Length: 96
Image (cartoon, rainbow, N blue to C red):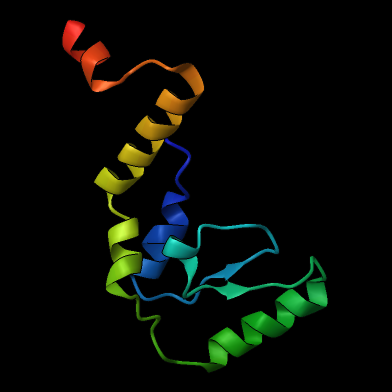
């Protein structure tokens, strides 16, 4: 796995209302998600009720859709790999 939250991205792409816990998520991908402020079950229940009462589909910006592409995610993972290992630059790859 490349670490991308695929099921969450698929839900948004299908227009579902996505509720995320109070963690740091990629704003490029999850700008349209509903965010919890705490881990309080009552807050989650309230957000679920709000999401169910709001019949609109989630509409994603072109930037959000582009950030969810496989190519974008794989390039981000490649950059992370290169930054951590120092291996995998273009010159390094052409020698292999």
